[in-house]
Amino acid sequence: MALCLANSLVTKRDFNLYDQLVRYKWWYKKGYMSSIGRCFAIGNATCDSLNTFERRQKHFAKQYDLPSEQMDYLSDEKLLDKFHVYCSETEVAGNGALMRLAPVPLFFYRFPEYAIEFSGRSGQITHGDMDAYNACRYYGALIVAALHGYKKDQLLDRDFYTKHTTWFDGKQLYNGIKAIAEGSYQKPGGYKDGIRGKGYIVNALEAALWAFWSDGDSFEKGALAAVNLGDDTDTTAAIYGQLAGAYYGYKKLPQHWVQHLYAKKFIFNLSKWIVYEGQKWQPTEATTPTPSRLRPNE
Image 1 (cartoon, rainbow, N blue to C red):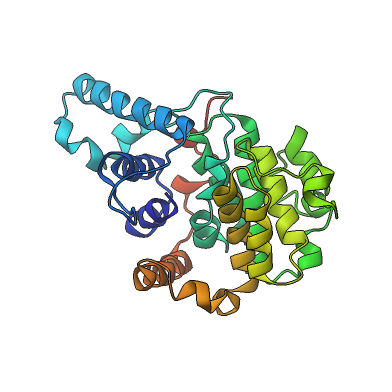
Image 2: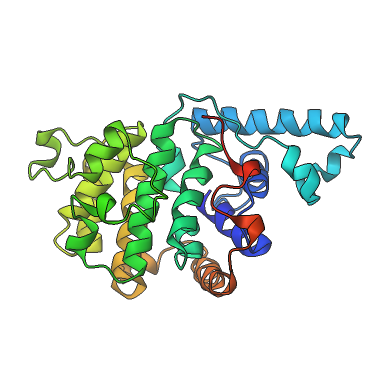
């Protein structure tokens, strides 16, 4: 799904939630961007949201007399404004919203307010709970800060949010996400102290940050720590890897892992493409952080 999201950003050269959903649907239905040519291990929340999206496409095509086979390529801005892209129930807060996030802050990091707001919305189209929205916003902000050269103690500062309220457009973090921002993950005992890499997005975020906080300045050690927590191991490690990768950089990834990466050249070039298009992107009146057509139901 991260590759789907990255492809959407670079081909559209902008943040387009409808196109992101189309590409996720292609992965779900056709194996687009899958390393084995088919979808596997899709979460219930994502599955439900993509099925809802497909139903809405069919209804939309009938309502506006559009060819159904062209719905995946809808580009008319007036029609896109009318399509409701938030396809999740409001209390869905699984970790799937967070594990695919990185392409958004990578693309928009030069404009932190946009990067953070778009990070939240990128998750909410499939996971409608405000915890999912805020988890993605907070983690997106940390990735942005890492790309701006912040040191580790700055990223893990318990006052990071309060020092960057303008980045968050003054919007508060609530409940579990606020506690995480204030350092709830900083527990030396890890699993013994209650850190769990569970499917709930708050637990997953806390576990990934615990791995980053305790990784001894080693990407490899942190990834292994995330996996060895148990529970939803692949997702916890994927979330860890986004921030850790932004912080440590490509050259500090364990090369004995990188050499076995499937489609390594493709992923490397796609990453360079994100950098290229992101450097060219500029906000316009049509892409303010809070355009009405992107605003979720709250």
